[in-house]
Image (cartoon, rainbow, N blue to C red; front, side, top):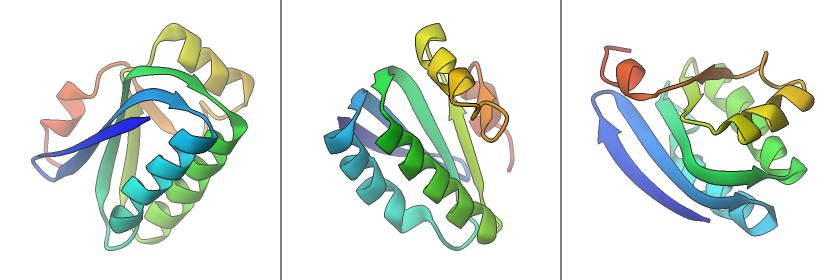
Length: 110
């Protein structure tokens, strides 16, 4: 998994490329760590992600809990239909804020 970080307004955007498997989850956890406190606004761009394993869901859930506890925001977007289906099957589409496109959201004020 390759992760590229950028800032768009108040949002930190992490672009994920590859598989969110064991190795990818470790990389994502490390990339998210600096943003878990202080009310951060983090958007995850899944446009180049084609697979997520259960360990990836665990990392996302833990990050969601920590960001929410710090009164921050976590946004997921740009998912393929296949990847979105994984979230639906896992029952996590109702947990996370998932949007078809991140651009309109991250370009607006938090």
